[in-house]
Each structure stands twice: as structure tokens, then as C-alpha cells.
Length: 153
Image (cartoon, rainbow, N blue to C red; front, side, top):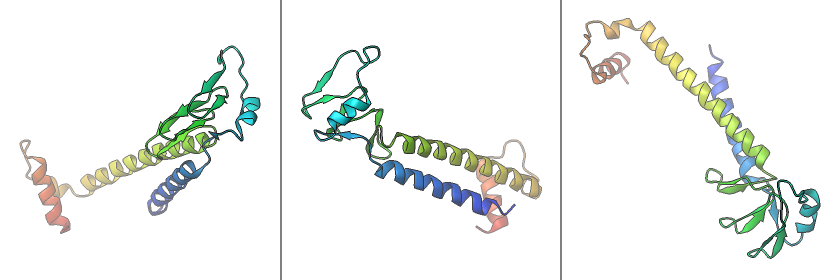
């Protein structure tokens, strides 16, 4: 079972890579130079986006599905939310990377929880002498003390 020594660090490293991609990817910032291009990409359709909006802070007409974020100080195309984990708005440019980061974080956590359960189960099964003589009224401190004595931690 030595694959655990490769899988867990690989998953954490991949999680870090997706975090860096989400953090440093272009998030879809709209300014005067690219506002017209975004209006062509995301036109107002009259169904979901019913009226044209003007951003007073940026001085541009906001394309459909864009919002102004006060924390970033700019309008973001396909604005989803501001994420405190990456300290950045999640929008058109970094949504894919952010989704992969969240998915990889979830998979890493599930794997590490399963690994902890496996190690704990293996510890209890392979060391029944730790629990000999313990009655129902023993507490967790007794179990930890016995484990520390046996393994000299």
C-alpha cells in the first residue's frame, strides 16, 4: 500500500496548481478598451437580460451578465462572485480554473478523510492490546496515553 505516499502529495500538489491557475488567471475585467468586444460576445437578449445597464463607477455600458465589483474596483464579464479564498472575482476568465480548484479540493478532502479512517481502523485492528482492560467508562485521554506509551511519540 505504498501508493498512498504518492497519491496524497500528488493530489495536494494538483490542488495547489489549480489554486494558482484560479488566482492568477484573467478574470474578465472590463474596461473602456474591451467593453465593445464584450458587448458583441454577450449581447442583451431581452429574455434574461432585459435592459442595458450603465456602470457609473467605471463609466461603461455593462455587457450582459456583467457586474461591478467594489472590492476589485472594476466590472467583471460573466461575474459569478467574489471569492475570499483566491481574493479575486470569479468571472469569465477564471471560472473554469476556479471550478477545477473547488473540485480538486473536494476530491483531496474526501481522499484524506478516507485515508484517516483507514489508518485509524488499521491502528485499532492491529493493536488490540491497547484496549485490553479498558471498561466502558474509560475516556479518550486513557486511550491516547496508552497509544503514546506504546508508540513512544
